[in-house]
Image 1 (cartoon, rainbow, N blue to C red):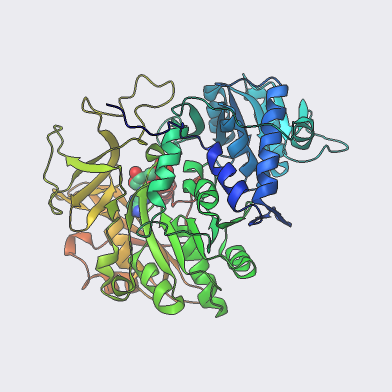
Image 2: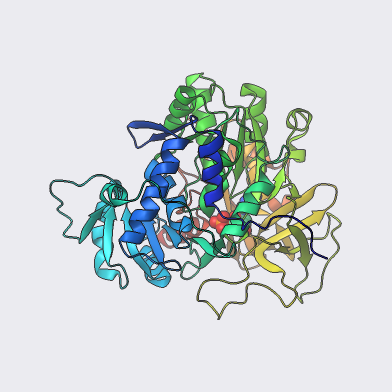
Length: 534
Ligand code: AMP
């Protein structure tokens, strides 16, 4: 017998309708970089007009359009207007190489490409490489002259042509909504095609108190861009709970973050560890507290426990660690860090936390046999859930999931009911030395405990006897006189002998990839060049 309940498809457009109806006067602010502000009522109306303008322009449900843009208010509107009519928004990553961006746009078959005014030169560079884009649409008003030589349209013209009374259509909730690509460190980037249902359910699953813990009293600032897992769900969470939303535009360096957080009264931000280490460093150097900020959602790479405890003890900012992948829509696990954990041993801050409802985890051995979830047996991590990918777009050659539907993550980890997930490393980053594994993450955390170390990254380099040995790259705090010998002397009593790096290299800055994480590929290249140069 079926229940006697209404059946409403779970569509993303419902989020904006909810915010328009219930939080219409709540503000959305965007730093583009000039400050811009309006309300959910205005954003909702503009998104509907834009959707109707896109239909008038000939966009059909099921087709894909691209965006090459930062975290702006027009981009936010696109995040709703395109999926809202059953089409797909491919948020292209302007930080990839031109060749890779062109690959993603062609692979996705984007019909239109929405271009941030800041990315016009990049779009002109891409144009000869693109095979499906019919029209470039500048995200702004018409400009008097455009030196790019592109066939242009303008966002504001499409909006103006739209119907103010347009109502969101209803359709199958499994319809694709957005498309993000993995960062493509090995081979071409791979497309992950999200659905309305999966994105909406995932946003609901990460919102509760042991997760993002968001409410209408919050001001949310996503420092994770929309092209990285839909901005980690922030553009959905904010209208869902009626939180004020602050869109930071392009720059997410420590100085800019501190300015935006202080001036806008941000209470919660989300982003990779590099962003938050930059903010923490800025706060320490200037002696300025990060205003009303009381928690950060941090993941994409392992946040150093020393950073988490520093943020809390100095500024009362809680870090909510998340683990997730482009393939898991948003966060799949979250470490709820209550004050007693944050002030206790930093070791308790290392795990990535328990799965959010809807996500299950397990580890398998090299032959595919399931290993115990006992917190001590590391294996290849697999994940399962209604918003985990089944396959990559147009890549039948890659088997993402096994026969039972468990998705391979490429991570090594332990899993237990006690602490949830603990990532050992990426399979390709773990250092195999003398028949044992050295976790690059654990060694980085240990180095980061040194007061003068701002950032630390570890790679494995080939060794004739031990197979691989760790090499540590360090960025020291401003003014610190740190030598490689100091770092080795600091680490020796703190880590197993096998972990002590063979080499410590001091850098002015670490290289970062297209989503702001430390790029180990680049570090391997840098190390190789040093070795060749003698
Ligand atoms: P991406 O698809 O770019 O978001 O990368 C996903 C990968 O980032 C995961 O498979 C992990 O290797 C890594 N990652 C994400 N969150 C964390 C975390 N909290 N700790 C350690 N690694 C993480």
